[in-house]
Length: 377
Ligand SMILES: Cc1cc2nc3c(=O)[nH]c(=O)nc-3n(C[C@H](O)[C@H](O)[C@H](O)COP(=O)(O)OP(=O)(O)OC[C@H]3O[C@@H](n4cnc5c(N)ncnc54)[C@H](O)[C@@H]3O)c2cc1C
Image 1: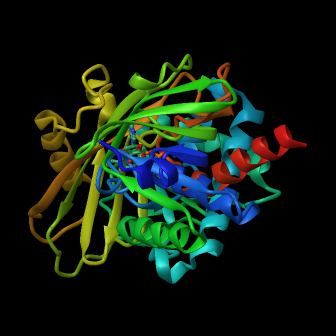
Image 2 (image 1 turned 180 degrees about the horizontal axis):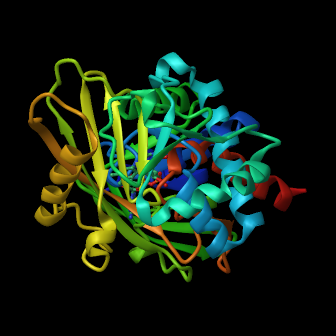
């Protein structure tokens, strides 16, 4: 039951954003920066984000050689270039907005281990470098294992490095982004699951379930759906498929030599240093049907494979001990480009961030603000 005061003051907003992950909060930041007087409210189903934004590997990256080549072959060169540019500019926006210190950004570098079956793709480095030369000159360079970065050298494989790649501290970034949007005056309502976003008369009617109060309906002038893979309740007519990502993190390792990020196999596996620890994740491609899920459980087969693969890749004095394991949910479709558009109901969709939404998010916020500005022009 609502009070008179609650009904007067809490059931309307100018802009409702559904989903409080990095995309929803970046969209909130861009809108509030452009229109400080609009009331912007984010509705998030959990106490803190529960999708991918607080559960990822923290690569601040734009794309590895084999992944970009696969994208070019599937999506075409122009769409791949646009996606790479959006990731690159998106990361600049987030770094400038929050500062490197506040997000734990470290420019430790990015590498890709090119396995034997992908070796011929070394011949396409120039093609990729030309595609991105106006924003990341000399993006990819072939390296030799003599670089001694702490990886095991395997016959028939080679290494490349990616310019400008770094790492963020995922938790710090999300806490800092939350603090930033709150400082702008964004309202953050957590613990409410939105299950309907419908146009009604001149406003949107947003129906949600609150743990304490039960069902509530909020009216809003704009409705922006930023739930990434979680679209079941939203009546969305777009290609959005969930993809579970699993990771493990080791206990601190004495004399750990490897520092930075390592991409393997079109980005299906990823390794990074976290101080004296290693974080290793991926393997979705080993069981692709089972991993197309919004459930957060671990897949034991994939976790065991991660442990075996880690031991094969990194040069270590002793076997490592795993400290924690977890899963997060990404969103994919036939192409890697995100959906950022008005739909047939007049709602804005900002969905399907694939496996590199960290860098992308800053630019998605700007793209959504541009959509609103164009509509109002
Ligand atoms: C294991 C793993 C590793 C990754 N590693 C990297 C990496 O190193 N670098 C990188 O760039 N990207 C990485 N990603 C991908 C990146 O994390 C995502 O692209 C990005 O976080 C997507 O952000 P989002 O805000 O769009 O979605 P999410 O973070 O999923 O946020 C969506 C939010 O919507 C909320 N929500 C869902 N349904 C409702 C509802 N009905 N009502 C209200 N709220 C709702 C959810 O609780 C969630 O908080 C990784 C992902 C995973 C899972």
